[in-house]
Picture 1 (cartoon, rainbow, N blue to C red):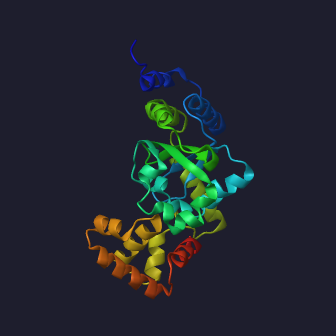
Picture 2 (picture 1 turned 180 degrees about the vertical axis):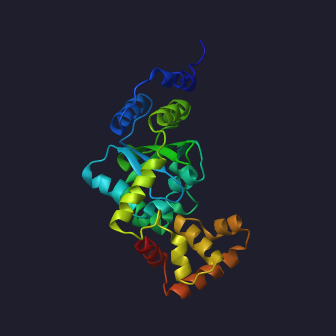
Picture 3 (picture 1 turned 120 degrees about the vertical axis):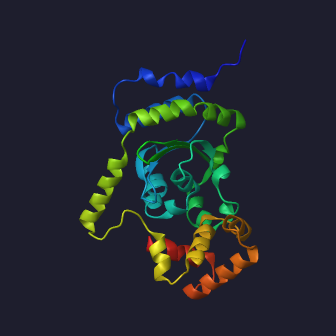
Length: 266
């Protein structure tokens, strides 16, 4: 007998849906469908648009985890998240965190200071770009005690992408207005509020050159000096010289202090 084409089977289901659903119902439906394919501990669904603060659409966290995974994340750490950068680049498909993370991400100060608080063994995301410049990311998470997703389960999730993408696009269309409303609400409380936490303005105020600012951003994301040199087309030694100059200008001596300065500005 032929091997069932799970991706094709699931892709045929979305036209059967006709009614609009609230965020909670869509999230629950997504979770129930995925539970038949893989084991996971929690779900979170974010919408991303450019550099703007992500909009949370659904999650299964208790209040303590919500504070870390959503509230704290939206306050600034999202700017260093590999999932955020993949969403901003309009990637599509199913990816493990380690596939998208920079080469030094798991030993970076960002990982130690923020991401380690999540206590995750692995995160898998469905990246769904939409027509209005928004990318929806539906994430399945496994705690350290559950270990990473087995290869057979990840393959099932990968085959389900067409179904998940159709589900997200059908029930979460036109999310741009939510970003506009969120900005309007922030400006109601602070007339000078910007649409995003602009790190560029921070580096300009601190008298960093464009090259130094680019290197600092990549350092904070978890890229090694070697990887940064490759991305920017400069020698590794030149990257290190720029890093020393940045630390001198900012009056700091460690990446811990650099991250603290960055997040406080957000």
